[in-house]
Length: 114
Image (tube, rainbow, N blue to C red):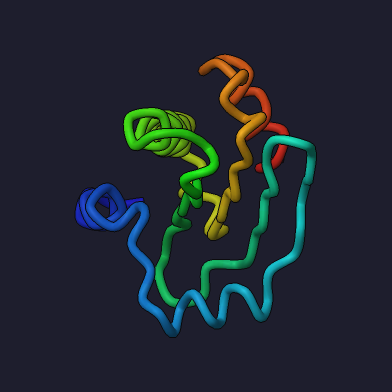
């Protein structure tokens, strides 16, 4: 992946347009589901890199808790270069997901992407 594509990936790591989301949910498959998270994946068709979207409702917790989860997931996605696999990933979080620390979340995400 060249430098320009990497810079574009870093800026658009979690940006989806409405049409892209509609297409994603029509073609998505459930990779893993547990009491805390549901992981949906679909091949990245519009861009040369994969993206991630974390959905955490208010039931998950207050905004700092939701934002912490989103930052952690995005950091793992970027640091482990999961975007290079050209797979879009959506994570739907439930309140029981708050008990997962960074290491557990990283292990879970890496098991999904393999």
